[in-house]
Length: 152
Image 1: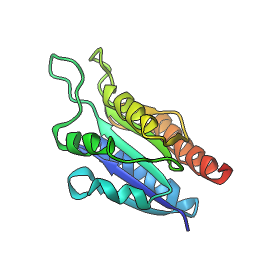
Image 2: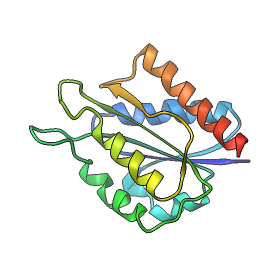
Image 3: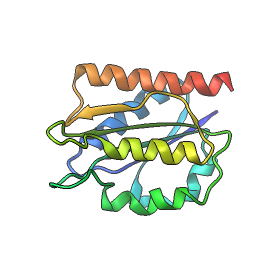
Image 4: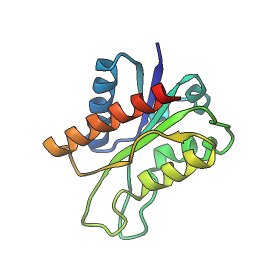
């Protein structure tokens, strides 16, 4: 059975909910899913996964959108790994009030691609909490990731 590893950072619970939506759909599609908050994960654990998913929020307080403090080490550690053969996807939450809406999603997208992983689905960016349309996009995101894995 294929393994999907979701690593998430969530301050308000919105991104944790996003991770849970994706995890539920992946399980429905027959995958084993490990859904873990970023401070409980050693970066090397992603090497066991067939699909790597990062769900993060963007910290914005009057500056440029930044990675949440709690996921910075995980992000930095990714640079040490060759992820060739892995499928990845990135999703997250932000606030469209800020110009740098969901910039951390884009940052992780670039990092995972630079490590040789294959993008399996378009990024999903949610304004604050997931609503009905967002849930549909997240479920498609999960379905696309599985399709990309099966196409390998």
